[in-house]
Amino acid sequence: MRKRTHSRECALQILYSVDIRKAAPLVEISTDYWQKNSEDDTVKQFAMLLVEGTCKNLKNIDKLITEYTDNWRIERMAVIDRNIIRMATFELIYLEQIPPKVAINEAVDLAKRFGDGESGRFVNGVLDKINKQERKNK
Image (tube, rainbow, N blue to C red):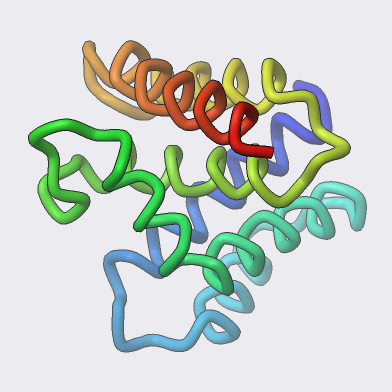
């Protein structure tokens, strides 16, 4: 598995924990995760960039997701799908050095691996709308 792909997987697991353990601070959750899952520094650094960036910009990210999901409140989405979409939206909007196609494909792969049977299609549809519209707006 490529390092960035593995970083995204680690980041998703941390974001999932943050979402589930709402009262626990990010520092505590990430420290717990890295104590149980030792990774090389490259994997850890990119994963934490994704986690911290997603959490820091969560309000704006959730607002964007809500704009591009018809008849879906963010709270109603499956926890895995919601966090994959949040992380990929962070990549699309804030990490310009990552090609949109890469961010979307990686997110869809995560959704297929960790979500249910329809997760890949759902994640792809939402991210495709966000990417097309936001690129137009830039």
